[in-house]
Image (tube, rainbow, N blue to C red; front, side):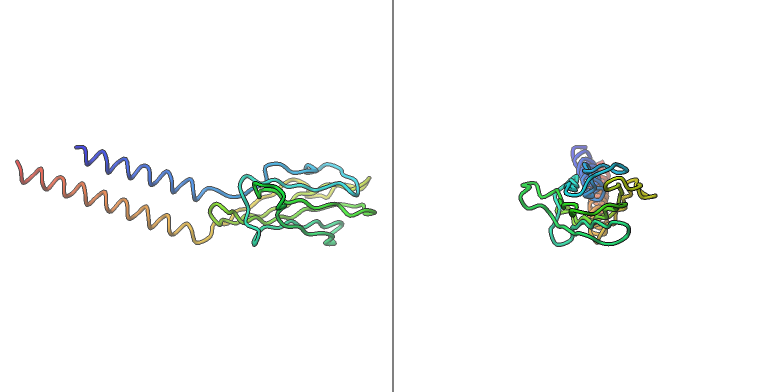
Length: 169
């Protein structure tokens, strides 16, 4: 009976830990200026993400009226490595769009999205609301294979336990 409980506990723990790892993405948690707001030239755009980012796959691009104006990577002065910062160039006005790509340092999952705001007295971009999409890399099959291994192992342990119970009876 104890072996069955142990096998069940291992199975539940494996499934729960695998589900958490697959669900994690580095998504924006705080953006400045906010989506659909107004900023002025010289203001700083700051996007803080929900988890640590990898520098080799995370970036932010600022476009004004559809023209790329500035790009930035992780703010390495931020000890959590979860923020990207770029300044709005002086002398520009217009409908601004921020597009971002994030590569999670936790599980190598990628996500991307965008949002818009106005610079100066310009009109807001039509699609100023925050959009976000996530992609899972090859980590998912490893979790599935690990989960199947645990399930098969637990099944074999239970079968062996039942055989012993049957032989002893």
